[in-house]
Image (cartoon, rainbow over all chains, first blue to last red; front, side, top):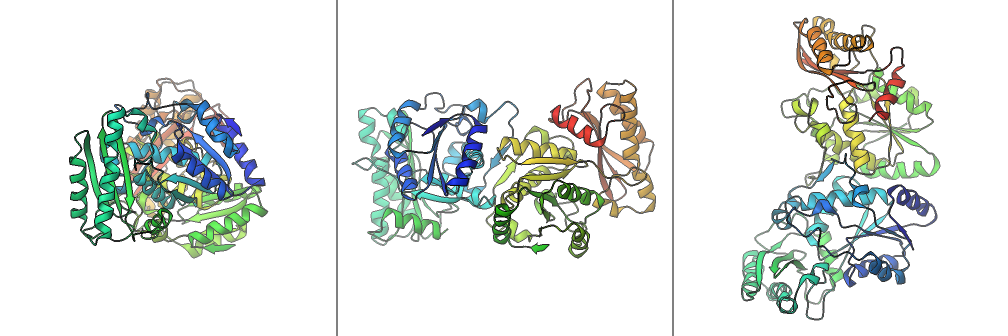
Length: 297
Length: 297
C-alpha cells in the first residue's frame, strides 16, 4: 500500500500498474471511511481488481455555507482501515494540486443533476462530476465503485460516463446500514444521541414506501405522501424532499414500475442526511435491485 | 485506411491499435479538408504516430443562426485527400451516435472561452470542448494535433486537457496560407471573387501589428489600433475584434511580450473569418513562435 499525493506520480504508477495488472478498480472517497466505503473496497477486491482508493475532500462540491471545513478528516485512521485490504495505492492529493490557480474548466451535468440534491445544493454535482472525471483520468482505471446511498450522484456520474464516452465500467454497491436501518454516512458523526435516534426516520419513511409498493401501490404521489407522513411525525426531522423517481433521469413518473427509486433527504439537528431504496419485487436482494435500476434506465 | 462510423468499433479498434503501435495521434477535423488539415496529418505521420483522423461536423459548436447545415461536407473527397497519408482509421460518426437523445453533460470552459469567439458565438467553445473530450476518450490516443489558425480553440482545449488531467500531448501546427496570406479555412469557400480579394485584409492587419512589434511597439492598445486602421480601410470587411493578448488566458496585458498573440475576426461578405499571428523575434520560424507561445503560458 503506497500513499501518493502527487498527480504526476499517481499517473505514472497507474500506467505501470495497468501494464502488469488489469483491471484497475478505483474507489473514490472523501475519507472518514466507514463500513459503507469498506464494502466498496471489499467488492473491488473480490472482483480481482488492482485497488486504488482516493481520499479527497473535494472543495468544488461544497457550497459556501456547507460543511467543507468541518467535514471529518482522518487520513491516518483511513489508511489503517484500508491496510487489511492491501490496496495498491491510496491517493490523497492536496486541493491545491487538484485545483491550481488557473483551473477553470468544469463538467456541467444536465437535468439529472438539477433536481433534489442539485436544487438544494447548487453547483454540487458540477463539483462531483468534475472531480470524478479528473480522478478517472489520473488513475488509468477500468472499473469505478460507487455507493448506492448517494443515488443521484450515481445517476449523474453514469450519465457523464456515457455522455463523454469514457468507457469506464461502473459498479454500484448496496447501502450499508446500522442495525436500526440508518444508512452509514460520514455525516452521522454530527448527530447527538437524540438526533441519532430520530435519524432512523429516513429509513422508516423509505420502508413505508417499499411496503406500500409491495402491497400494490404504484401511484408516485401516494408513495411520496406516505413517506412525508412518516417524516412529518418526527419533530426533529425537517424534510428537504421525498419522492419516487425513475433511476436514470430522476423524473417522477405517474406510475411507479420496478427499478424506480424512493429518495429522501432531511435535516436532523446539525446533519443533512439522504437515503434511498430501489423498489422491486419483494424478497429481491439489494444487488438484484441495483441491477434492475440500472437495466430499467 | 478504415472508415469507421460506429463508436463501439472505434473504441475497440483504437484499443487494439494501442497494443501494437504507439503513439496514436488524432487529427480532429470537421472535414472539407484543405492543406491546413493536411499539414496536421503530415506532422502526425512525421512524428511516427499511428494516425486517426476524425471527420465530424459537430452540431453543438454551432449557434442556431450559424452555418451548421450549409457547412461544406465532402466525405468521399476527404477520404481521397487522406488516402496518400495512409491513416489507420478515418472516424466519421453520425451526429445521432455522438449525441443520443439522453445526452446532456457538457464541458464548460472558463474565462479563456468567454472573450473573442466565445463572446460572439455563445456556447461555441462548450461544444468544441465537449466534442474534443468525447473524441479523446473514444480514441485511446497519446497526441492530438490542432491548427494554430483557431488559436483561441487551442487555448481552451489546452486548458481543458490540463484541468481535467487528461495527460494528452498537444501539438499545434502553423497556419497554412494562400500565396497572398489568407489563412486556409473551409469557410473560404463561401467567398465570391471580390470578397476573396478583400479577405486578405485580416492577414494584412496582423502583419501590420507584427511589423510594429518588430519595430519596438509593445503597447497592446497601439497595436490593436493599428490593426483596426488596416481593417477599417477595407469596406468589405466588418471587424468583430482585433486585439493582442496573452497566449494562455487571452487577456490583454498593457505591455506585449514575445509569445503574445495578435487576433482578428471579421465578416467579409457571407463569411466570418478569423486569423492570428504570434508575435516574437523577427525571423523566428512559425514553429519557434508556437513554442514561445506555449512556454510563455
